[in-house]
Image (cartoon, rainbow, N blue to C red; front, side, top):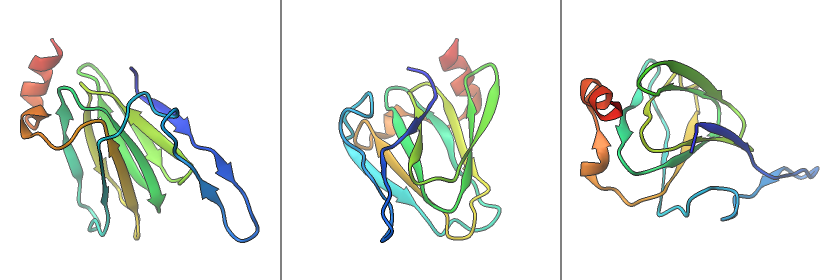
Length: 130
């Protein structure tokens, strides 16, 4: 799997829009859902990679940046649409920052929380990528 933006179906209606996330949209079945909110200005989240787990991030409200490092180069993705998400497979370092006021990040994860799956030291991550 590669890092990939995925557009979600959007049903437009004068009463408000609706987006749907069904099991065939993601390349994994999610086992955990969590969300980040009330992130203070200037604060950063993430700062880790996963050995096995993959994730799909959606900006439900507002915006934020996702810095991705593949062990060689880095790229920044801005998420700011509730009908588009970012697929992050295992083996990528991620940092989330520049949260707008009211920014909410929804995360669908392929696994339940297991601390041993996290790589929280960047030097260790670079060794993992070799």
